[in-house]
Length: 75
Image (cartoon, rainbow, N blue to C red; front, side):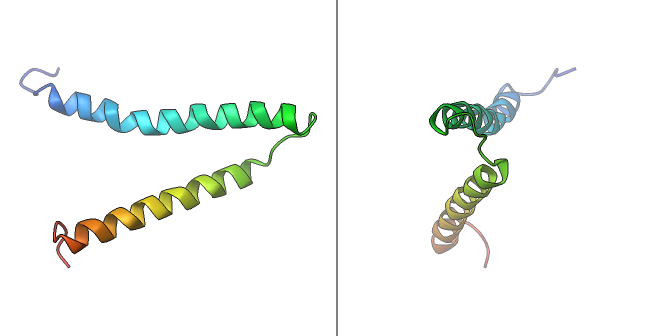
């Protein structure tokens, strides 16, 4: 099925999925830790996802500015 495909592309696909998997594992640890710290109350998933989206926006915006400044992207 993958005959003739260099191993770089499957490795790149696995590496790109690693960030989402790491974020999911991190969220699980946050929820477990919050349950013990908040005395049994649950942490709101909307709050956790909002913070995650905010960090993604900041990271993407910074990198887009960096790459567009050095003309890696056409403007």
